[in-house]
Image (tube, rainbow, N blue to C red; front, top):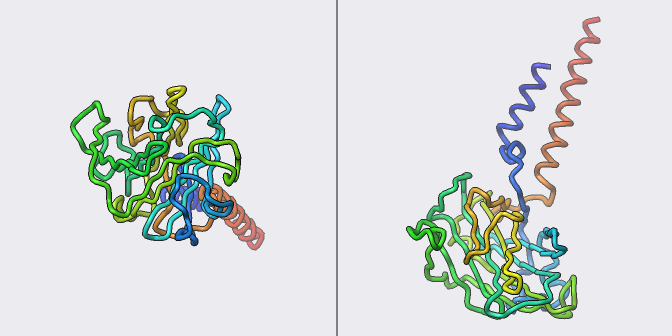
Length: 261
């Protein structure tokens, strides 16, 4: 029994994600990124299909699809606000925030980056943490990296989920900008100007003040853009591993006792 307790304790120490149960999104290496058409929407049925997907369902019935992938050099994010049929170009926007090797600290740091693009725009904004102004949540606007692409568009009949026009946002973020890591702090959101509401992942943690970015301590985790991880939920994997280890240790102890009898 003592060995079993030690084994489970070691699992928790080695895998803090398992212990802390931080909201997580998993992504893997994806091919075919060269064929993405940067128009802010599904251009053809297979365009974003290979990417890892998380469907968010909110209490008011709205749905947001968050798709992610990487090619070792860039992180790809697609925010598809499936249910939103009322929208305002240049007022609605999508935002992706990310930080490499982040600890759960509340203060905004210089390795915190946010990328924002308005609906109907091909001109994104890049924000970096570490500023002095409380009014901007300590984020300051910096020059875009030449490799950054972000487009806010209106999905149409090619959309995988709804042919009714609705807002969607495509992002191509160079990993050299945010830094290479096996785990990122991660936050995404879409702002609906019609209702003055923010729909985010993790859910329901932000206010509506531009640019609607909560404290980094409330962001979730993205695992892992610079490594090809199997598409298998990590907490579930660790639970199965711990359960299997428990059975193994228990059986071994039982066999040892039988030999002594």
